[in-house]
Length: 301
Image (cartoon, rainbow, N blue to C red; front, side):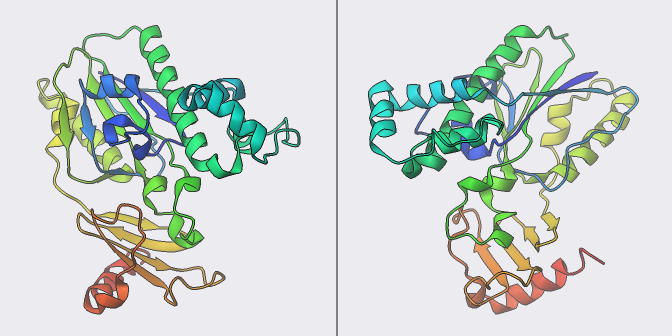
């Protein structure tokens, strides 16, 4: 069995129509999602590196960084040419001073009007990657048993709320909540998986699937993953530890060099209502915070 793994950098789930983006369309992602299993709550907490397994081959594909001209064209098409030119001519930006050796994404950041940095960059990237996905699918030749796994390789820290401190940003929604679409060649039906799944868990489950596949050839990857139970997502990072469940996200700051967040080293957010981690309710739930901190501190032991 061959899994074609297409990883896409700087692509949070919130950038795609199939995950709720309504300001612009991502037709290639959305068309594929309509015939795939879509994991609504996939969170990155490790590198997505599959180990070789008997009976399962993972072929990794990477989307190259898009060219600056392509990003600019995507931004212009989204805004329309008149609006784009008007913004470039009336707002201050650094189009003449940007480093030509920098990557295209960084150069787009310099060229765009400052008031539209995050929105324009995120939109241009999503639209460009949407085109790249369509080109990749059209240019590939798949066998009947092949599986396509389309996954965000990383989120975009610049899309986090401006009030979000650096230690909290590492586990914020646009950084760790990534798209995960799995399509079995020939699949027509659409399925949504609501249970949370982390990168570490995904790696473990695919390994378990490979072992199961040797005994039961009728087992398919999407069904196997979709039947997995609810889990909690854990992070143990230099700046913070975090634990995300279906209902809560708690983050403990470890780096003491930054000014405390709301005079506290712990943040607690309700899920799924507080999607952007804006309302810290740690002071309202001291008992929950104490229990959660005990669990968090076991991570590093």
